[in-house]
Amino acid sequence: MAVYLAGNLFCPREPEEDAIPNDVFAVQGREDDGTVEAIMLKIVCLTFDDGPSSNTGPILDILQEKDVPATFFVTAQEVNQDYLPELERVVEEGHQVALHSASHRYSEIYADTESFWLDIKALRQAISPYVDVEAIHWLRFPGGSTNTISHKYGGSDIMKRLVAQCGEKGYEWIDWNVSAEDATSSHPDAGQILENIRASAEGRDLCVVLMHDTAKTDATVEALPEIIDWFAAQGYHFCTVEQMYEARDGG
Ligand SMILES: [Zn+2]
Image (tube, rainbow, N blue to C red; front, side):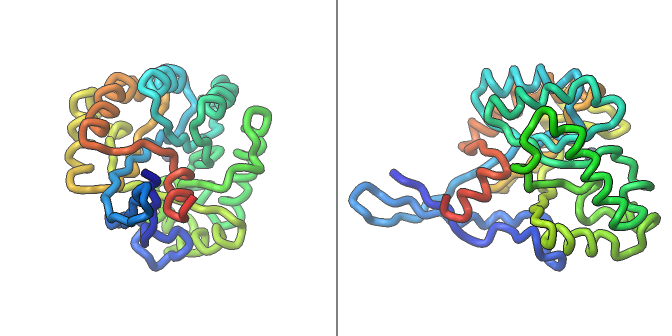
């Protein structure tokens, strides 16, 4: 049975829209005899921010073993430098590399819109030896598109302006609607991370899960096999952010 996805998922180019994806994911399944039957497809996009780091390799091992794709929103801070070559493996194994920030310093990237795009340019340059940067059109704003920390540096409308410029520059952006809360100061253990995700994913047919692959998030690596098993047991299909969008647009 061929499966076609359609419907109003969320529009990343509309700053007025709620950035959290809505959960109405209209799906049509076409039977072999041509009849169209509406079915619900549950989708999960696993996303990892702030890497690569020493934990990216172990995460890739788990994704490979479980045979599921993920999306990595990468940075090029001092701590990432030694691990940037790991991005070659990320792409080779069918995952998506997307942009997050070079410095990840809010005071710098949100000082004004020009600073933000200069930081993105620096990130593209840093990762260009390892990935085809021309093929990258997705980004995630540090702190999310609705963060208010940026107001302190760039004014209350800086996010609105950056969102508008994304459209002009040909970028798509995405936030998340499920959070592992794995990079918080409370340093949750693997059990707590799984619980955070389960609670946050409850009742959602489309989950974009925020996790981190930094050197500090060992507990995320530990929790990942169970996180994947849990989503699989709930009937979710795994895909990258890009694949989700292609599916939405009919492939
Ligand atoms: Zn981040």
